[in-house]
Length: 159
Ligand SMILES: [Zn+2]
Image (spheres, rainbow, N blue to C red):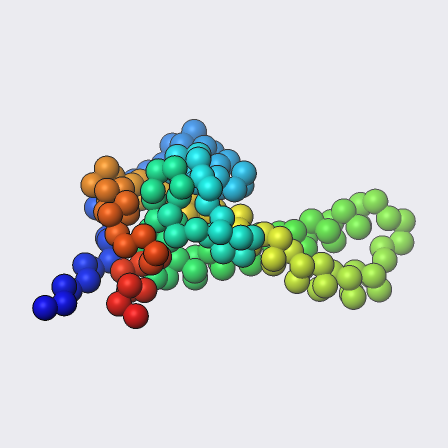
């Protein structure tokens, strides 16, 4: 008799008001491409793909949920948008006559490149955001370590 896959792990903690120090630590680790939970790693399979779980603490980098991609993309497009504004602001500040032609053609290409540059940062920043509001418990971390190692979520394991 085939065993029924366990349901995806739901966070056990209620939403928690984060402290400034913990928030900075979580995002600092994410933007150094480390595991936001433990600061270790490795966390990247390659530039555009996270490993299934952190190599140090065993936290599943999608936290066992199938829809983390949506949140990561929200962060990614926010980062790329802020970057585009920064480029325009710098161009306005440092040039005597703003090179609008260059901005017209160069900025869309540059933002497209930045989507790939920011990709792993956005994924880890989303995990940091998630951990900021829903810290992982010892029991949840145990679930992360026990789940079939090759699958990112239990839903993936059913395929
Ligand atoms: Zn870790």
